Length: 356
Image (cartoon, rainbow, N blue to C red; front, side, top):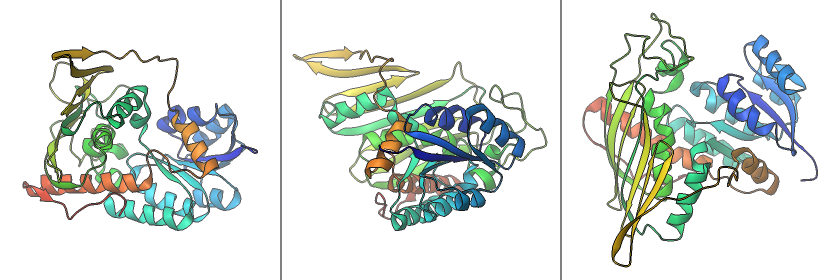
């Protein structure tokens, strides 16, 4: 890249600082230009700490004044569509935190804006880019699992509510609870592994069990006993796909379980995969004998860097690994889940296609 890519960020909360800023600031191809947050004190602290040249409280003003190449959107979910569409219209490539939007309708508007602009829009689905995920995807692409006919995914916490009264527990700002929060990571991941197959119907159920308490908050998140909590704290369901495969899933911010668990399983005609709390295993048959394979991935070698990847996509005009059209696909599945849970009956999809 002959010149540095001019970078800005909208929303300067914990995730923005820990993930996006920390990811982009180490890239030699990036110039930190501007940070925007409604909290001017926070924006100034971020700018001073990391070396952003200018500070804004109005993202529209920032987009008008700065000639940016990339902007990260790290505001609450309810603002993703509005900010991303305006940024794309200003000719800026967008790295939008997950979930892509509040719902499928907003996601489609974002996709339309991306296609009209000719710029890139990548959803921050970082679990697609871990070493384990990259390795599993390679195994699948090489045919080592055969046809995947069943998958399971989950992320269950014993105490992990992100603060009663924060935007996470306010449906108008978040679009939903744990399903749209934690579910976005691992349900998306197994569907990505399976090639984003066309969904047939979904059966979903939600529960709101710990809304009355602040004792099940995640460490570091302070709750307000009088704050809004109108979303689910647990979600379970099964997705049926047109190719006959199924995906079962469970997600919870809080539950009476022994320990937290993050997992996925893929069952294929030639092999299987299990990932539980960071431990990856493959199962197959060699010489007429069932075998367990324990991959040893070098943690010192990062197979894909999310931020370097997007910078390269912008510079070279390539589609990112988590493009807008994939975000539309997933958000429409989430819409179907919530419809099923509300109606207490299966929800049939109307031939959802990736990116259509």
